[in-house]
Image (tube, rainbow, N blue to C red):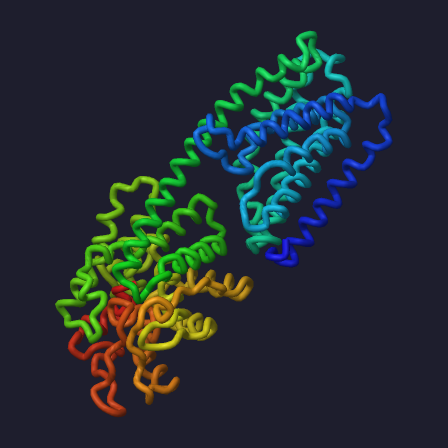
Length: 503
């Protein structure tokens, strides 16, 4: 648990203590309590957790999918609250957990399930009847559904808290969508739990109750196939990114960092998690069009000619063509095509302006420029995060959407920026700046344009060579955009975005 933030450790410890308090009264129940049933349900749930890894499943079922929760819900209906809480603990503790912090994940999973079962059992007994055999079956539907809803609500509340403590989600968005997305499935599982409980207490006995788990097992198999398909999607994206990194070695790791920054912006804006995931894909794949650009241009050690720059500026369209047939990317394809558009209409490939630029592309544009400015390149050191944010703010309204800039700034202020940087210097020997290029000289070279992010947000069109220097000491390029004088009006019109052709 040492890798977890202190807030997360405290939150998980508090949850474990609360779960222990829920189960503690079980020691006073005596021999008349249904201990045999509690042990049987605990063993059954533990077996179900291990079945997640059965080869017949066709793949590991994602943790937290909860297709065997009817066992726990049946326990909430059959057992007193303390025993219902205890029945959830062994299965959660023996289940496999993802690294890192596998032990903390197990403790957290056991604690949240114990509290949810305890609350569900209390609600069932408050609304219904302590004995399943007393009322008629239809009468049990209302208390059983109320118990399932309580089970779902407790889990949603606890999950939102751990998102804040462990993953630093914004408080205002941590619980957004958790309950609505899960309530329906949990109510269905509550009905299955009621069927298990009724059969358990019937003349057919506990063995008949196991038949209810058959459709649950089939459901697990279906979800396992979905999980495998999702893993294949991730592998496809990784392969594309690795191909880009191999071709353009100077920006290795850039794509992953842009994906991370895009997620920070999306979450700060309160976007649904499904859209957040799509924007992560968009950020990671935004430069996939480099695969269609000649390698000699990406690795050229001098300034680009106008003709070469026009080839570089085709990379968003190349990228869109490459991912056109990948259906699961959704609106990420639009972000790949339009992430070099400018808010003032001076970008490329289509010169869109304002809200005609897709929202996802406006997110990726800010994330792309931020990482470009805060990453070390062969021609300059990385800018500090505050300086990069200041540059983005200066360009807001011209090149970047101010709303996206504010969202990134707020997220950085709260959570900081801690990328696992992959520096070009760590993997490839590259030319270093001349000895007389001081910090002031670098700043002057990189910020020669009125819209200064033009320099850092894109280098000189590829992200691997320095912007063109002035024609002589104290002489600035006469384009008015801090770029190559040979570019003339094109560089001035495109400003920052046109110098970002290679990112």
